[in-house]
Amino acid sequence: MSQFNRFLPYTRWPEELAQQYRAKGYWRGEPLTAMLARQCELAPDAEAILCGERRFSYCELDATSSRLAGRLARHGLGVGDTALVQLPNVAEFYLVFFALLKAGIAPVNALFSHNRLELASYAEQIRPRLFIGSLAHPLFASGDRHSDLLLGIGAELVLLDGESGELGLTHWLSDLARAEGLAIPVHGPTPADEVAFFQLSGGSTGTPKLIPRTHDDYFYSVRRSNEICELGPHTHYLCALPAPHNFPLSSPGALGVFEAGGTVVLAPDPSPISCFPLIARHRVNLTSLVPPAVSLWLQAAESDPSVRSQIESLALLQVGGAKLAEAVARKITPLLGCRLQQVFGMAEGLVNYTRLDDPEEKVIHTQGRPMSPDDEVRVLDEEGNPVAPGEPGALHTSGPYTFRGYYQSPAHNARVFDADGFYCSGDLVVQDADGYLTVVGRQKDQINRGGEKIAAEEVENQLLHHPAITQAALVSMPDSAMGEKSCAFIVSTDPALKPLALRKFLRERGVADFKLPDRFETLDALPMTAVGKIDKQGLRARIAEIIAAGQPLTTA
Image 1 (cartoon, rainbow, N blue to C red):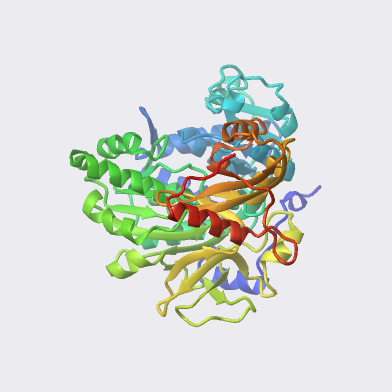
Image 2 (image 1 turned 90 degrees about the vertical axis):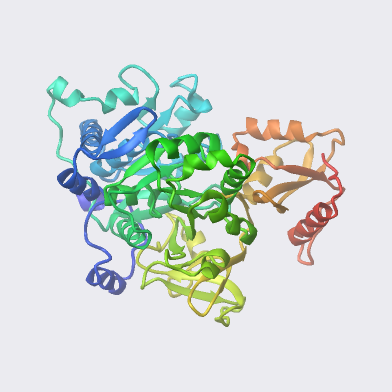
């Protein structure tokens, strides 16, 4: 088999567009690993990562990731292979990420909040030869290498962070090649126009689908984000959101920091108690949050003004992942003492930023405008016709870093891409005369719980496995802190069925905690539309009215 035939399949951009993007300098034919090589030339001893008491210079980040890449190559892994990775916010996440890129292995980086269902689904989609996990995750805390989950993933090589011995990740990251005196096979990244890794979709129709990202398109999005956000060696970025998320990875995120020669400071979670001391200690000047975390920071600063001295170095706070309420946006500068930048993007591609020199009106009221001159945005009505500026419509987009198709999902791609190759994100937006977008809703049957996307269908299917439940519908309900929470309407044969028992049931079936319904309502029957579908619009209206009236919910 030729190397070319080993490249992972993906939907390519039309050649005419690809040539344009190369001619304009968007796609430079560089692998993502080139950012490390450059920094090793410019400032090898500069701090790249701060993780607890551990510090990694650019030279150490490059050398350690190269060692792991070499070990994996010697094991026979390389171009055409895939890996499933699940690590928390630790330095090892980046060490592993760059190692896999260097070896030409395309990873799926699962979120640490993901559970059995998600991991099994990713494994089914990519059939990984390599799994890298952490004993800090409850699924692997026992260290049992013969668990049903690990056997189901089917990887021939499993490395676990926190495990001692020869199959511990620490062992594979150490300088073993030199010690063992074994030759390392020739290896290297995939070509820049081939798949580098997979991002995760929001999972609007079930378990997240996989988004192939090439070196060319992803590297461009990082560089352009850096230009807009003005990153440089002076940047100290706090990664408080889950590291694999597209937002803290590339908008501009950690990769933007590495490209600029700055420092990434890792936080275990976005809570004020975790983040504020880190900001003070490391003079952090940039971070990114989702709206619920912003609310917690504002509460902390308002209840105890003395803590504001801990975050005085913070210059810019990026907020994205979910709609930021105007009232919350107006509090950020007065209470936190930093500028606000709104970000609206998607793992599939299109990223919008408010600019650093935008007037307050734009920063407070919009989610920014597309970052690339070649981002194409169409806002269309239900018939597919363009709407007037200021009118809501469905967002369709195309551009040099917006993908052209989910991985091996032809049927789904046919539904979400139009004849011109524009991706329909499912977002309902308003675009003003200056090109700025304001998100006003979604077409997708998806709940955005503070930036965490919940596919209603997935949770409903799991509820229907309960022997006492005959019907189930998961809908969003308004929440002042999270933006949205979830309410499960069920029809049950057991009147004594309680929410606690149902949440325990879902957990046992492997459903992640953030996907567990916040409320349960029991009905004699679910309302139906004229065409025989569950009337979710009616259910959403029902729960919203109950909440607005301050009435207690009738729970299961």
